[in-house]
Image 1 (cartoon, rainbow, N blue to C red):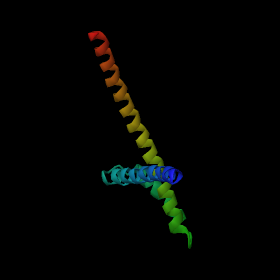
Image 2 (image 1 turned 135 degrees about the vertical axis):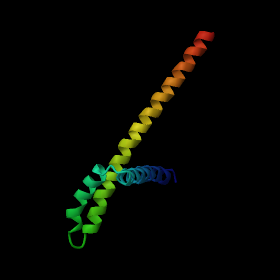
Image 3 (image 1 turned 90 degrees about the horizontal axis):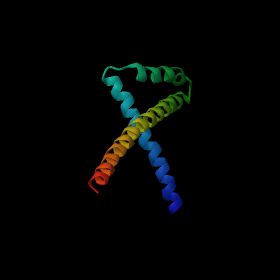
Image 4 (image 1 turned 60 degrees about the vertical axis):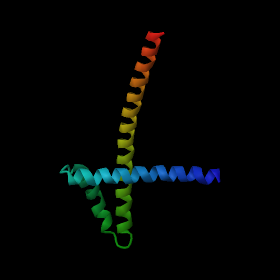
Length: 100
């Protein structure tokens, strides 16, 4: 069971990055920033024209770039969260040392 749960955590992490990246990809397009979505769509178009597997290949391209965008955005947010955590913990430690 532990191996199953470990595998689910990995799959779940990739799924969250994929879904989050796709939300950002579509959301930026709806906000009027068409560059990212246009780039991915431009890469999908030639693959979608392949008979039989084109739709699947286009989906793979979209999924891949959504995953990458989600990972980049997640790294940025995690970096900001870590920086704020260090900033506030460092300030707390200094206040406690000054009070002692």
